[in-house]
Image (cartoon, rainbow, N blue to C red; front, side, top):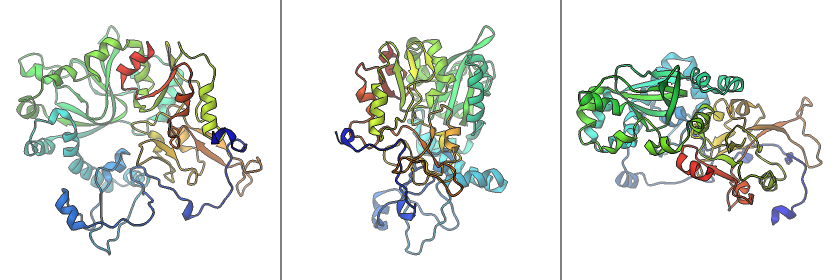
Length: 455
């Protein structure tokens, strides 16, 4: 009600004020600093008793896992002494130096390999029955591999505009291993996404996709162990970029297959298992994978069979954001499903790459991707990086309704997008306002829920 009766404000209104240190909010993304009020005092001795701890000494580094993968931090760090001096590097800076310095890149990658492998292996349920000592042995023999391009978005945006044919899009993806190749280890997806496909006639048919902690090749190793063929029955390609951990085949035979739950063999190589293959049409599978929508954790999907075009969702969004809608009710569609141009709050938010101030970040408490308007400089890097065109650059106005100008007399721009109505107790206003249940926010990888809702 307060929103309805609030005084009218011009479109994209901002209160003109100087942005000092007191105006900086929490940046909250991996590799950035959280700004909290006050200082938290802890009893280090008590922490050592209650939790598993280890210490760092100068000049050791930490935080490279979160910085390289743009993911939440996996550990909490406390200063054990009052005179502890730290040097913090933003994840953007770390990436820049890593690109320019070979020695620094080797050091960071070595730390990533050393500290991250055991953690990643333990997160994957296929290793649940493996003891810690054996897991350490597997980690020492495992290979860390990267495929594709970390900055894949620009080429993808160009090519997806030219053609939406599956064969064309697949041709852009880096081949990790090909159907018919000799089985060469178990592949665990460490970060990113990968496409699983099989040859059909003169093309490739997508049979599934893999994401973090999924694995590829386990069925083939099992068949080979039973005296069957030793060739891969499907191909694996990097969707954009993907980090892969390769476990040598002999270690799989020796330590993983014995005691392995048989259910993993049925579920491997295809996200969602056999149920997804039965319920999800091939065209829909290609649509979601080719457009990279599988990256979305809160995608806005509109059921075109129910939508009547009333635009109540757009109006509700505008009311919740000072008369400024934060999405466009348009976007790619397949049959009765339309994926609207609204921020999907991705698993891998590539829009974060390149932001010079860290203004766009993943919120530390909710996991949503948000923009700090006070530290955004309007450079449009995030908007250009978003492969889904879900970030808009807008010219902002002052209290009088006139455009705000910089020192050179140019209009000032800011990046805007859907924030999932993070300040609304009822959640996204667009969903609440739809009178026909024609709109939902969903994790695209939850295909069972998506298929049922679209029926």
